[in-house]
Image 1 (spheres, rainbow, N blue to C red):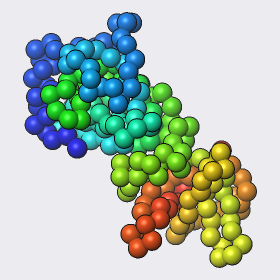
Image 2 (tube, rainbow, N blue to C red; image 1 turned 45 degrees about the horizontal axis):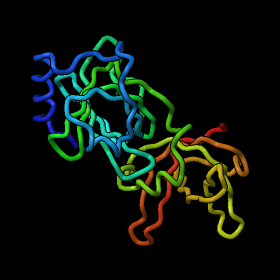
Image 3 (cartoon, one colour; image 1 turned 180 degrees about the horizontal axis):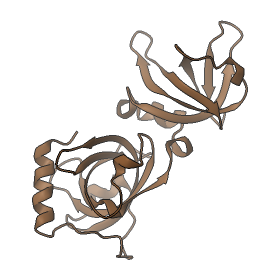
Length: 214
């Protein structure tokens, strides 16, 4: 979502000392992603967001997109190499990340600049990603491989398998072209698969690649 030109600009900013490792500063305010447009550029904040896109650049920088699970707001994150590993080395789509970084509101959506030392995994996608979140933010996740937990239920009518949310309020169809999962019927499972939208029925489904007991 961020072009290489944006990353080059970030590198120049880094060379001028605009963005530094900020993890040692303990007074950053915690703000939601939806609040970022009202934050003054240059302010250092702490944010939490769901990873929806990650790109690795030849420069060593990484471009990420984080979503606010409570709204439609997103933020672009430009991450520069530090001492600790880069996000691509430990995070997956759907994970919740915590970031301390400098806000820029020169463009919409906002951008946060941070070093890898100031980005960390807060919760894995299996812990935070729900069927409701997938459905409400489907444009951000469609076509992505995700990990999600739920109760596997095989319906008696057409042998279709569905994944039911842990709160019992929602479910999603499963397509399993290469694996057998009927033995997991009625059990709490973690699925790895691609989140898709059927254009003919406008119904969501998960194309399952892997399934195991949670």
